[in-house]
Image 1 (cartoon, rainbow, N blue to C red):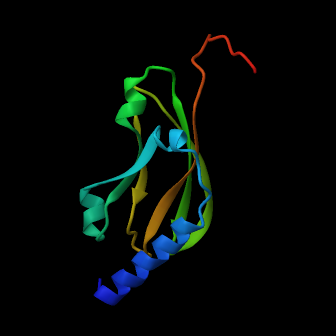
Image 2 (cartoon, one colour):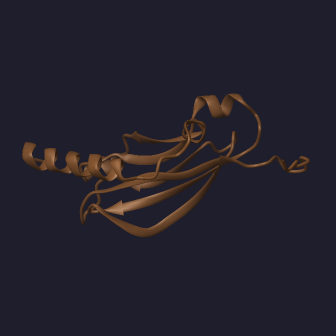
Amino acid sequence: MSLSLFTSYLLTLLVIAAFQPGYAAEEQALARLVETDDSLCLAHGGQLISVRMTDAALAVPEGPVEAWVDRWFMQVQTADHTKHVLTAEAPERELGCSQSLAGPQHWTLGPIKRLPVAGAIIQKD
């Protein structure tokens, strides 16, 4: 990837991120997007993108975390708006490669919340 293409791609990502809705810091402390090396993704010049519970969320056993994720392909938001339920037993979900054969893609986090524990009494204020 040439430097000017990389710079253009980076600027596009920054502009997209600037217009994403802001979520409370507490929500963002529950899950995040991570990049890891994967042989298939590396073959296409990208990395494997996953949504993962943070260490802080794993340290507090209050129940599963629900994270909504949006996918962007070639700087265009797709109809993929998916819900992922992350637990201490399965704290990570693979989303896909950052570089596909057809072009770049990335994901953004939407609302994130802690789900009630099964059998817990829910109090409404």
